[in-house]
Length: 117
Length: 113
Image (cartoon, rainbow over all chains, first blue to last red; front, top):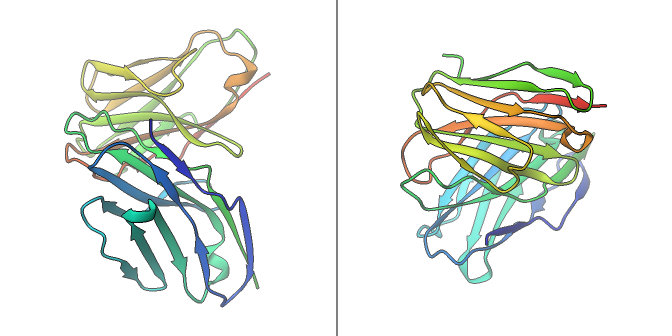
């Protein structure tokens, strides 16, 4: 069985601080995919990044960066110089590698990030 | 290009009533999914479909049925609603490429009293 753990239920920081959201996963598969989604107060789910298990390169996109470490089964997300607009619930998710579509996402419980002005 | 749409956006049901949630996508995606989101629980997979005419159970399928008669539509049915089914329901779709991200609809907020 797959499992995703986001141990931080809620994080509150002041604007311009850096913040890291932790994600630890469990899977028996050797090939899998990891995702981060953002859910702003409006409620929709916004895709942020996808990473496959063969690619351990870190990724940076503007103020966002992701650190994937297979050795610790972690896929952490860092926001640099946070802004109020970053306030949202962030979900880490895991899917199996499957050509047959049987790869619904296993989500963590989410981290509620509050950026105070 | 509307992406993934869900109908209705909100609904209140009494215990024992039935209803159907409609999900539609215009991206020609093969795979479609229904999730439910409960406070503090993240999203959990209810049912999914790998193509027209096919459906399969996810993590929490009890009390729900689904149908995929057309490729672009995925219906979620509640035959006899229970208060435990009060939740926000999200539909998603993705193309037939392994590991591709799922595109989510805006959600349906269902309350069962």
